[in-house]
Length: 119
Image (tube, rainbow, N blue to C red; front, side, top):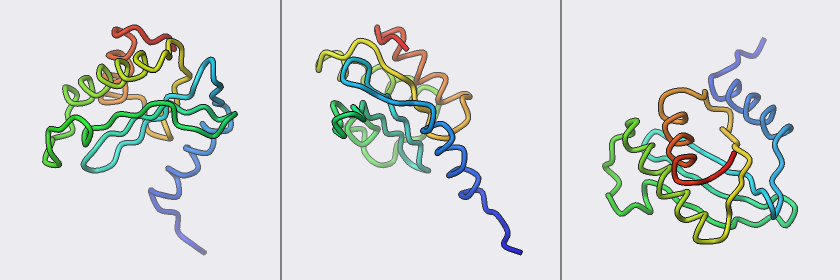
């Protein structure tokens, strides 16, 4: 019997969320990925298969040695929302990517909402 790993469970959660969330040109999907070192945010039009805007801790210019804290996630959410608004995006569908909607993801989403994005 094959043992399931944490990654297997994450992939299952990720595809369950993706089955329910679809981005369009009018309301793109705000996809979030959290690695061990960085947070990535993309605004994706699934109908066209194109990324409209993106932001991450790497794009922030703070260097690769950034600690992933709630404050960092809040900053990324704020800057990602600004990048999206610069491209004319006002409404999005939030795709948490299989990650738990807790501390960092919640801070990122709240910061994006404060900046003016509508979920």
